[in-house]
Every structure is written in structure tokens, then in C-alpha cells.
Image (tube, rainbow, N blue to C red; front, side):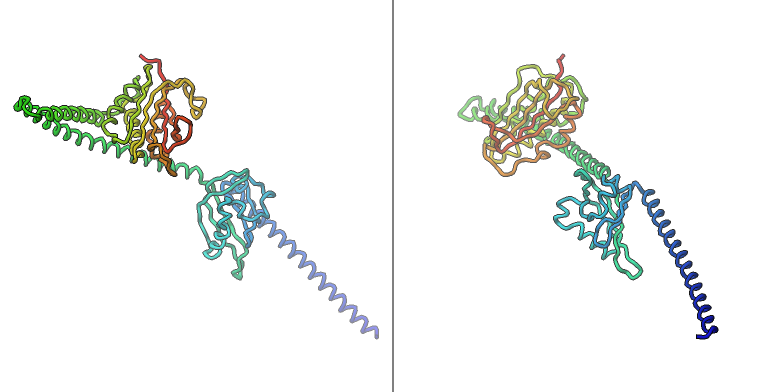
Length: 403
């Protein structure tokens, strides 16, 4: 090879090396720029993620495994990122939902629709369960391939509790309105009924005077007159109850209120129903609204009567209860008046009894608790302690020393 050829080869090699060096320098700069861009993107993602710390931001891969977990998710669920990243999204669902394959179904639906908004129960660390509002967004690359999911969640447990409280308040208001309407209806019916029995009684007495003891008719007329008087007395009681309004909490003899309720109930029970009344011998005083107490006891007693379609026994008892009930807690008074309203269905057993709301409406429980008392509901037991088909409501009212 001539010297000229060698020189040309050297020049070409030098040029190639120079070009390679330039190319390597450009690639290095491009790689540094890409790394800087990626680092900026990661920092930006972290900043955005932490900026919405009040929300849980969870990134999943296309199979549903957790790839990113922000501080909001840690606060919501209780898991640190190193505890949860790499686990499947389904671990944040209840066992019941996992058994029904709900997590996978929701991801599949989000993939088809592009986005899915749901509200459901979630399971956090240490078996903590809460309600969450969740938005699942499907993530796709430039070619339209599914590459993962972005999930944004926040705790709505307090909103759910408030909604349930509002629904309960509406139910109590509706119950109160129904009771007011029934009171007005009872007032009208009792008034008309009283007029009718007054006419019957007057006619019976007129006929008695005219017959003047002749034949056997006088005996039947006396029976009509007696029953007309009883019916009139009952209608007067109904009128008194229907026209009473709330008096506010006053010192009240609970035994007197219970006796009035019993007097009304005796006229409404069927022949198959036995009324067992045991009024405590001591004077039982409590600071309470007597009209609301009477309405509450009537409501419980009527519900018990309705539960005994085939007959049975209705118990109403009052007594002192010096020991507080177990459910009362440390903030309650230590001396109580116990009012028991219980029933059995003729001693028969049944697979289903009255629910707590059927026998003890929420309005009754609220009134008792607002009065400083406690209301408990349990299955009724016979003398041997075995459960029968029936329910026992025990009302504990704070006992006062009296007048």
C-alpha cells in the first residue's frame, strides 16, 4: 500500500472516529435530557399526587396490580406504599366482593367504557371498613392498547352516616305525622261514638221507665244501659287521649300513667289474649312528659297485641330497678323505674318474630333516651328461662324521690 493510500485511510478513520464521538456526545446529551425529563415528570407526578392528599390516587397496571400509591391513599387505607405496591387491587375490597369477583368485573367495565364511577365499601388496614367514592379511568398508549388504570377515591362514610340519619329523621317525622293524624281521627270517631252511645243509653232508660219492670225485657234493658255507660266512659277516655298535647317534663307518677294505659287496653284485647298486669306497690316518680309516656306505652302495647294473632299473654309490669341495665353506660343514673311490656304467642314457637322496629319504633326509643332513660328489646322467656316466640321491651326511667 502506498503512502498516499495509507494517508487517505488514516484521514477516513479520523473522520469516522470524529463522527462517532459527535454521535456519542449527542446520544449522551439526549439520554441526559430524557432522564431529566423523566425525573421532572416523576417529580411532577409526586407533586400532583401529594397536592391531592385528601384523595387517594392509585395507579394500576393493566392486570390490576398496584403500581403507584400516594399519601392520600396511605391516609385513607392505612397502608404505606412499600406495604401495598405490587399487590392486586382486589385486596382493598371486602371478602364478599372478592368472592363475587367484583374488583375484576369493575376493571373490565372501566376498560370497556373508558371510565367507571362507583360508591362502595372498601377494606383498609386492620380490617377497617369504610364507604368510598371511586373513579376508575382506563389508561391507553398511543396505539390504543390498555396499559393500566388510574383510580381516585375519597372517604364518604360521614356523608353516608348523615344521609342515614336524615332518612331516620324523615321516618320519625312521618311517624309523628301519622300519629297526629290518627289522633285527629280518633278524636272525631270517639266524639261520634259518644253521641251514639248516649242515644242508646237514653233510649234504654226511657224504655225501662215505660216497661216499669214488666216481663223479662227490663233485665236486657239494664244490660244495654250498663254497656252504654261503659262505652261512653271508654269514648271519654279516647277523647282525653286524642286531645292531649305535650306538657313537657314534669314530676309524674309512672304507675298512674301505666294504669290509664291498661284501662284503655282492656277494651281492645280479644278473648284469646290474656292481660297480666303487675303494678309495683311503691310510688314510682320520674321527671318525664306523662302524655308522651302514655303515647309510647300505647304504641308498644298495641304492637304487642298485633303480634299475637293466635292469642297469648300480654304482660305489663312496673317495679323499682336499683341496678342500672348493662347497656346504660357510666353516664346514666343509678336508680331506675322499670316498665316491662312483653308478649308471647300462646306459647308457640315460630321461626320469625317481631323486628325491633316493629315492636319498639325509633320515635319511642328517641323519647325514652331524651328523657334520660334506656330501652332494651329481647326475646321473651318463660319461667324456666327458655325462649318462646315473643318479645320483651324494658323501659328504664330515672327514678325521682317523689313529691
